[in-house]
Length: 78
Image 1 (cartoon, helix red, strand yellow):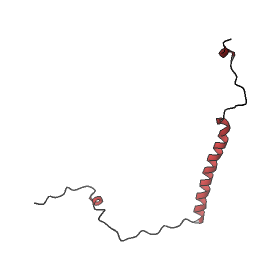
Image 2 (cartoon, one colour):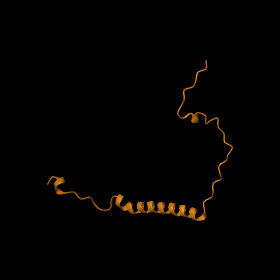
Image 3 (tube, one colour):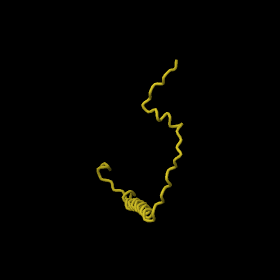
Image 4 (tube, one colour):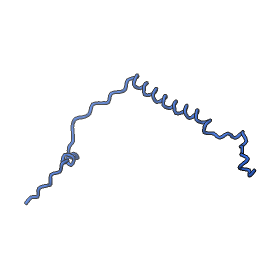
């Protein structure tokens, strides 16, 4: 008469939408001044390192425009 439902290994997931808890999670604790200052210091250190490496790499990435290009005599056909 009645068909039995096939057992599902994760049947509790199918029932999760029907379950409602009346327990509220505890409020989040605020970070202390030392933790906040440490996070800011770490962030500033990372940003300063990236900016410093970019500044130091700029001369290596630029091409010299004031020096004339030198060609070998072999390229001139002599």
